[in-house]
Image (cartoon, rainbow over all chains, first blue to last red; front, side):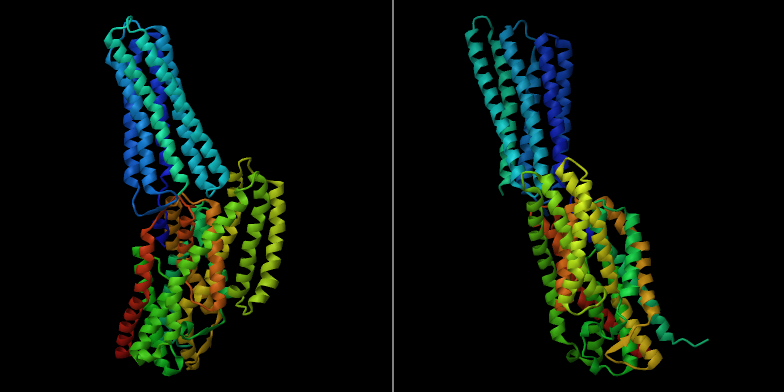
Length: 224
Length: 406
């Protein structure tokens, strides 16, 4: 009876996890670029920054595939809108990483004070944490469904979401610190450099903002 | 060499074709959850289904059958044996044609409903609308609507209870060790009772539960409790629990195949037995004996249907259903078996196909399956409305032609 082959649709969760993998790779590659940038190895940095752009394209393609496969005819464990909006948020994490890479490619800075560089690198490391946690959160969401929405698993999911929120507020703190630092040093930096640094910082903190938005969506998925 | 009645020969061939269609069509219903959840391979599924469908048909099929399935016509209005012969042929041919068409288009149709439609069709042409037992027909219609709904409700509740009991506690590995045998034991209480009612055709539910269901359930509970105690496979409770239910699914799905063979073989061979009775004894009574060779014919037909066409269906199912886990598969089997048990006890002609599909939807509503295609609900409703009338019309036309020619 072919009724069986029509009955079950493909779950969106495995593809969502795959998408999250690519997003994580994108952020990790960006962090590599930041490290090279910190060391002043601009040659290599540019190659790696271009790789960030390529990975973001891969993430986009997977996003489109998932979108096309989610028919409104499906009865799903989580609402279709939630899945689609979550996917959109998760994809924004990679977009934000690509934005940072773009700023890195815009110019080769002459000499940026090392404490500023220090802070930027720290922000990069923290945003990887955020992206890793998003990956963990979507894997845990799969498990929540597997368990039939058992409180214990939902509890664990909330812990992950909280962790994402705390990373986000940490990056916010670093971002504020960096802005203050840039204006303290306004006499050492020309306007172009200041503009450049502030934008790198802004796009970096954007990564964790988007991660937080994605986490928010997962919260909504759970309490239907 | 005894000369064989040509009409009997035709009926035998048609009966075999109908049995083949039942095997081709319904085989997947008993085995799909097990194949989909990777508890067995399609090859194993065909072997298990073929052997058990035949066993069910041959050893447990009714040795006496009604000439008119489920008493859908007032048989006292059909006294002419010739009419019974032509009618049986028309009904069989119509049901077989419809089943094959439905299989082609992938509609979830019920074999029982097809044959009922065929019989009603020739009855109406021969003796008018008053020949149909409309109370019975009303019951049939009611069961179309009830079987998926009750299947869904049952699966919803069982799924909620199963996940709560196994996964909810502080230490899921421990609660899985305790609760899995309870669920497996419960399933076997149902299986034992079903065996008594469906396979041995026992009449008294109490006897079934007390002497078959409960002892079997307790025995299986004790056995599985110790087996799981000795070798709980994984530190991850989910993987551990799934691996337990994987083994249980082989048994539950095999049981569904056995009951299906015992039950549905009558759809194919009832009319054959009716014609045989006319040919050998010239009688057209309410009930006729079914010789063993006719049961074997039905059993072989179903097994051949499973092996030839059913195999393809299973292969597709194995590739397509990648999302079904063993706990879900078990829940579907368990719910469907329980609903069919209650329906048999109440004497309702319930459709296994519709009950199983209902159970899947029920788990979906309990947020247990990641994605179900809602189109299937539409397909079920279409098949309700279409099966009986189509089989009836086709059967009526064939009957008219036969009366004209014969």
